[in-house]
Length: 361
Image (cartoon, rainbow, N blue to C red; front, side, top):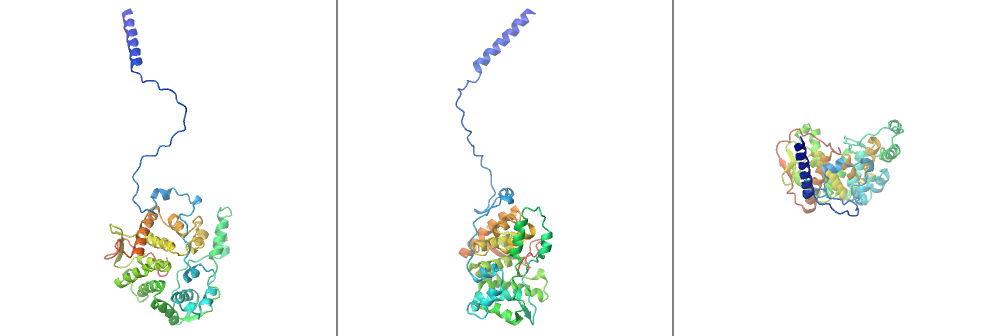
């Protein structure tokens, strides 16, 4: 029994000696320093255009703390921007009616737009541009909770957008033929917005003649005209031409980028709109869509149309596509090189449908 204890003690002593021989050396103490931030290892990122947003960036946005995505470009000084931002149209109509300014190509186009929107058209049936209906103020006020944190801003936006733009023009009468002549004269004078709108009306005119909506298509000549119109860099024309190209036609689809992917219509149209903003379209806080969305849906944090389209107008996937599309569209408009944007003849993509009616969404 005693021999067993001797062996056990010997083993413990041997282990202790081995530990002292093999243990790690003790390090001297150093003054405590602030921790150094270590950059995380690079991870693969989605391949997007330089101005694009990764999906994670969009998902991390807190709309309550939203600031402008980018400084809003100055509105291009033009009759069209004046028309789009005017709260009352009659003063502009009175200024243009039977004056040299109203006889310019853009003046004729603006007179046409005001009259088709507001005047009484006789001897014909004008198709009014799409306007989102608004409730009366009392009904609107009843829908907003007294505790809604954006109540005051929503009410202010409603009052700003609900200005009865046509007030005073209802008594103005014009024949359909005289109204059409205003647009025709503007087209013949080369006004880009009038040319784009005329093409859109030609397309939807087929519907009134009995052609089914899913049988309407763009001609090659119309496609070439749209490219020429977009080359003028007129922001108003860009919105209309972009709306036409973003729609779904019977045997035409638009393909974009080096891989020739078919465009997604909503993102494609949003890209045209944001590009038009960059060329001077009125896209600031007084934009009618910004005001309407704030008033009716409480989407009040956007400070520009670009903000609204990126953060409210679609999914994170849409926002990525808008950035990618916009870079390609800008290059085509600036350089005239449309090789990354091709109109292809063939069957419509499966599940495609019409997104935009004549004159609006």
